[in-house]
Image 1: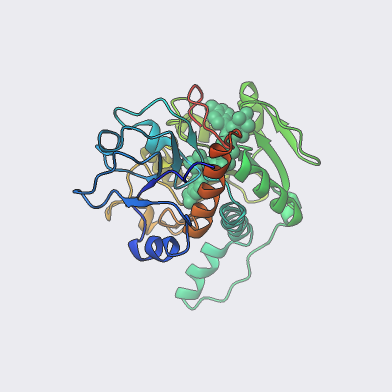
Image 2: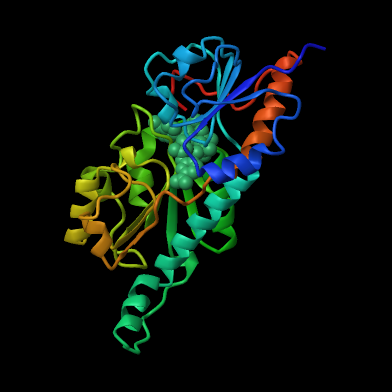
Length: 316
Ligand SMILES: NC(=O)c1ccc[n+]([C@@H]2O[C@H](COP(=O)([O-])OP(=O)(O)OC[C@H]3O[C@@H](n4cnc5c(N)ncnc54)[C@H](OP(=O)(O)O)[C@@H]3O)[C@@H](O)[C@H]2O)c1
């Protein structure tokens, strides 16, 4: 059996976490750090990357496979001089579970009017609000991939009526599904819209004023709510802030933004009906990331096909 091929790490994650995970990762394999500018990376065959240095491919010209540090690959596909080699997405139960926790939490927070009760608490104001049930609300999930399908399942457990939209129609028990040509019909049914889409040329700016205007008005919460944990480039922040300001949307939970970190003067910070989290809905568990990458490297070296390879035509 041939020797294990070297791997270069270029992850803009918390360095301590990466180092701790590396202590027991990639046994028998040379691990190179791209963060050392003088290190010779020319023999590296794999790269595990998140927002890598632009000159990585010049320094490591013999790469055979790229591993994304997260589920999304927009940060890789937009790189200059990207070599024509397979890109593997990070798919792992830990990532999926974390995202579903965040999505369910946000849907329940708006259902149970958490922002309004927090405001009342700050004002020492005791007032019970009228309360719909989960079954009275339709949650529409845009993106029925690994993350969307798990979220849908868990939202069903909480009792929400759930519908889903994706490029190709999916069959999910108990969930009405729509394909890309049926967006308007999907939106007209949706009280809480959940975005779990990758950022691609087709999804850039998809969450805009015209889309928000098509969501169902007058549902059990009165006005529709927008929740996004896909990518900020899919939402038009000026349109979203305006829709919230004008009351076209009744609230939002936002983990991703056109500009990250969210600028300190963004109107979202001060909106009482908006919940902001700092792109933290589902962080990659670095140990799981390295375990997955090692397993795939072993498959590759054994002549087996890689899994979760990105389709460059669709961009995800
Ligand atoms: N905020 C965070 O912390 C965080 C963490 C992890 C991931 N994410 C984001 O979540 C995204 C989704 O992850 P995933 O693992 O679920 O991805 P995935 O398995 O690749 O699924 C993507 C889904 O989006 C649909 N889609 C893509 N382009 C579309 C289009 N133009 N029109 C309609 N549907 C479209 C796909 O449709 P088909 O099923 O027809 O292909 C698929 O259902 C990632 O790309 C990443 O950007 C965010």
